Amino acid sequence: MIRQILRLTSGRIALGILAVVALLAVFGPLLAPQDPLAGGTDILASPATAHLLGTDYLGRDVLSRLLDGSRVSVLGAVQVALIALVVGVVPGILSVYLGRPFEWVTLRLADTLIALPFLVFAVAVTALLGNGIPQAMFVVGIMVSPLFYRVARAATLSVEAAIVAGASVSWVVRRHVWVKVLPPIAVALAHTTGVGFVVVSSLTFLGIGVQPPAPTWGGVLAADLGYLSFQPWAPLVPTALIMATVWACNLLADAIRDVTGEAGRALLNNRKVRAAAVGAGKEA
Image 1 (cartoon, helix red, strand yellow):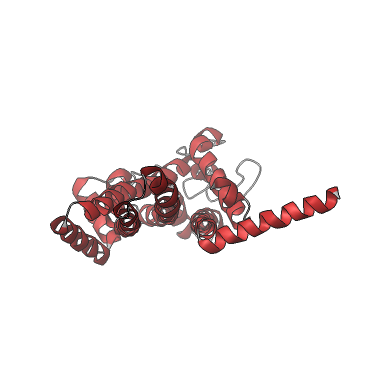
Image 2 (tube, helix red, strand yellow):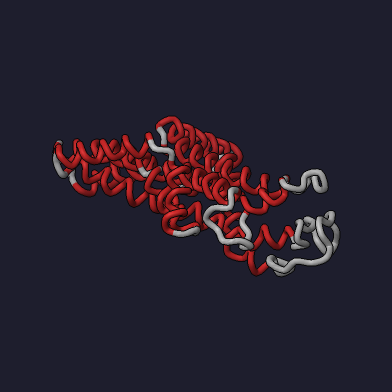
């Protein structure tokens, strides 16, 4: 699937952006040129050699704070996606095999979670259990899990039909699990990761989920908005980071859907045929 995604321009762009974001999450704190928590006398400074993105209202280096805050922002988004994956996929699969009562209960729970405002519940849980990203993201992951539940349930129904028809295990895995179950779950995972970035940025923008003065992308953006009259350019970089990451996640979801759909597979097959024909013509 990765090779097929890389054949698409949108897939290459999405994977390239997400690779950079992953590197920032792993090495960002190490690449920070200065202490992200250390203030100074040079307050609200413009970008210069000493501070490439300027300083904030406490004289802290903005670039260092963005690099150091990458890990929290990325891990929070990934936590949302993984929790939603586990909480949604397992009941979705079991609802097909455990009978009507389990199916009815899980469907009603999924409908209830869809109707609830997950951002409000995340705020309530952090107030109850303590101000921390893991607590907030755990709740958000559960709240967005109905997406995985419905995808996994629909895909499992097709697998069950093949098993009832007498298909072999190897054929079911090759033709149904690999082709029909995993792709929609991968699309949902990419999309939910983007949702996780939005939620993490929103909560940290409000000062929820992280203990000051720990930096995050949303927290840096909130601090910059308070001093727009002095630094009108300051919100551009954290906003661009958040938007590019969310856009890349959605672009990756679209690319996965394109290459795993019938039209996408036909397009890739046509490209292979044309490439082979061109190669044969050159040899001739």
